[in-house]
Amino acid sequence: MGGFGDYEIESYVRLLYLSSKGGRLSNELMALYQEYPRNVLFILPSNLKMATTDSLYEELINMYGGDRNTVNNARRVIAKALIEYFPTTVINGCRAVAFMSDGEAKVLAMQCGNDYILN
Image (cartoon, rainbow, N blue to C red; front, side, top):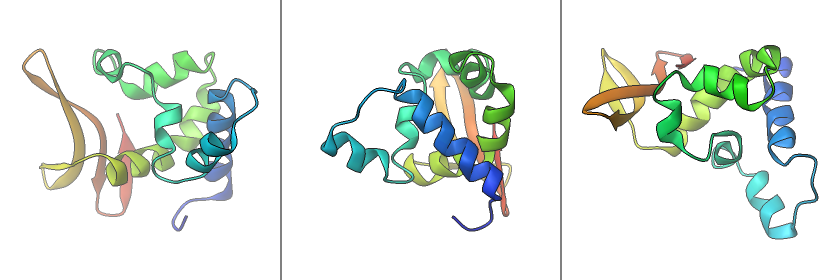
């Protein structure tokens, strides 16, 4: 994946591994697991609406036992996967993945130029 450092990609892969809880994966699941950006679904909370009450970034840190370093290192890769996988809208000139929650748009990720931001 161009534009990301080795530590960012390694952290993303570590989150994928942690999301499997170290369990054995079936061949079908493994094929999906290896497919970027779709595999971001493994990393996300099962209820994305919960992530919109706070920030997705903070929710991921909580999901992965407070492992702030790994989530922080993977945040741009996660944001890019979200931008590539989900429908986007334009907010302040940036591509964004947003959900409506209580009548308010909650931004999960943005792409502004070549920068990826995870909310």
